[in-house]
Image (cartoon, rainbow, N blue to C red; front, side, top):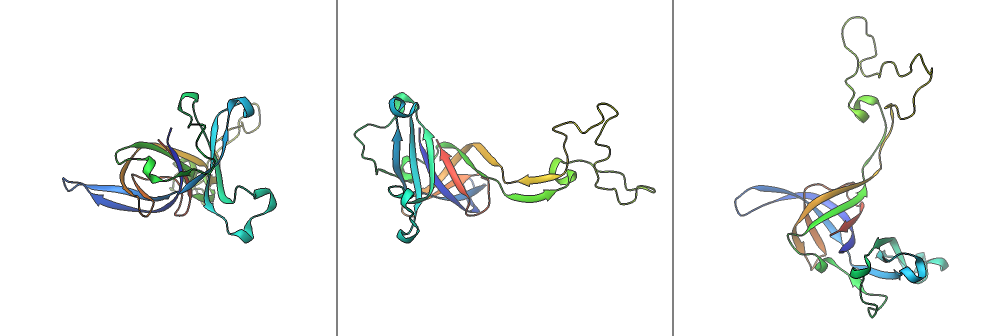
Length: 201
């Protein structure tokens, strides 16, 4: 299993050989450093923990010694696909593990939109705008019932929108810039520029 951490930069577009426009997202991926390898014998499961974006020395606290990174993430690995035990602890993962044409899935935190009404949050139609409605064009309407005389759990209502973990699958890697550690992924990925992304192949 291939995996790396990256930061969303921006969206752009390129042209293919036939002149068609391809929308892409530029992701600055890696370099990531393997900080720990968890084994089934010791931890009960097999995983690789990697760190991304090194901290400055003055920002490293005592509990962080040995793992001085802004971001730490674990990725599960299968028994038959785990890296060799001989690999040293501080091995580096960079964009070269992927190739152009690879299909990946990208996970990240979506944009936060704050408190929103039912029309924007759930796509409700709203009330009519004819005579007699008066200031209720974007209200929900009735939310309760005669029995059990309360609002049922899970009712679609106004509330906090966005800032959820989102995974987009089947994204194609269009181009890789190994010198600048940039991956160009076809289509859109979650979050705003600067969002931490997990890329798995």
